[in-house]
Amino acid sequence: MNAQNLSKRLETVASFVPKGATVADIGSDHAYLPCYLVHKGIVQKAVAGEVVDGPYQSALKKVREEGMENQITVRLADGLAAIESGDGVDTITIAGMGGSLIVSILEKNPEKLESIQRLILQPNIHAKLIRQWALAHQWKIIDEAIVEEDEKIYEILVLERGPMELTEAEILMGKELIREKSDVFVKKWTNEVQHMKKVLQSLEKADQTPEILAKREELLHHVALVEEVLKP
Image (cartoon, rainbow, N blue to C red; front, side, top):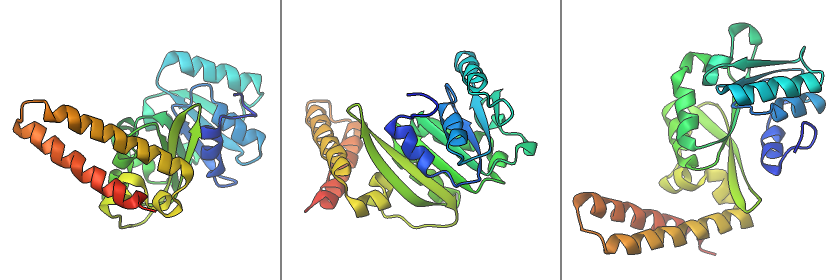
């Protein structure tokens, strides 16, 4: 992967960036995504934010190598604190983290979201938490994608402002993804059901405390939800 050829996961994230947007890529690592977006003429300006010095230095180096210092601003900052009022950012990308970390980043500096029109979020796990956050904060999921790369499966969620309604299954699995029911989606959730059933077997051997019983009921409910969606 480099600044002109992204991984399948990041290329999918990039595909949802509106042409002419000003993007803040939070947790940008080597700043591959902002550099790619500029290379492709999708954006003219971007911010690459990093909270860790090592990746921050890598991002600075990559932006210099690509000759994009006038178009991409690299900042060492915690989450959305990388965005400043004069940047004109209207789109945020956050990719390659757990859903709980992405939600914590969005909640830590809510004032930074006031001028944002689109969020493009790629959780490695627990996409459900992002859907719950969106429901609670008046963001609607306008599109979703699911891709497989190097034997790992990733979900990408695209959010814009507005209310939405989701069923319990749609919160867990994604409304658009359920509708499309791609081979990758079926593979992911078939594997998830198998995993949940293994956990259930192990719980049967544990002391039946209230916590264990509650966990068992939750898993049984999720298995039923998923199996209903996966029906041919």
